[in-house]
Image 1 (cartoon, rainbow, N blue to C red):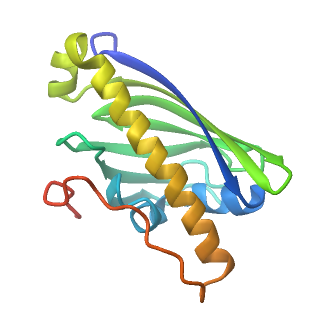
Image 2 (spheres, one colour; image 1 turned 45 degrees about the vertical axis):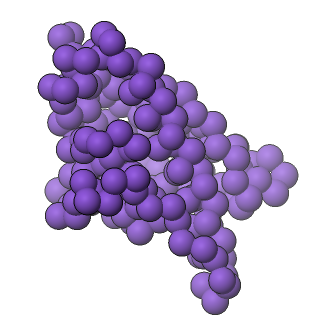
Amino acid sequence: MSRSAPSYRFSSTWRVAGTVAEVQAVLSDPGTLTRWWPSVYSAVVPVAEGRPDGVGRSVRLATQGWLPYTLDWTLTITEPPTERGSALSAVGDLVGAGRWTFAQDGPEVVIDYDWQVAATKPVIARLSWLLRPVFAANHEWAMARGEESLALELRRRRDPAAAVPPPPGPTFPRLHRPR
């Protein structure tokens, strides 16, 4: 991580109905993020295909929370996605690493996400000393939308004919720019 950029560590836990295999299938495919998690992901542009096991697969992302700014960064899968989880790296407006872990708990999957990242986007870097709690709340909002959106996506995949509501959209649609 960058020494001069403010660093953050976030841990989130989701609980959704489904199987670990279903969750792993969704979370290991970053190309689908704009479809099932549109409140946060406005653009996914493939960069590198990676190896057959998924390692090295990269996508350029535009992401946003409830605050009116966009983060541009590249996600690269750094460990093969398995039924235990996966790992990724980030470079761009965010620099760091994330790790998903999955555990079956009866009819639900417990999903933990550990995100250690430095914010290099100038507005965040300059204002972190003052707005760190606001930036943390923005991350928590984004992750809550992710849990809700993943639950809906799993329902849609299980029964494509079911009347499943759409995932929540972005807070600032005009700033949420597809590329």
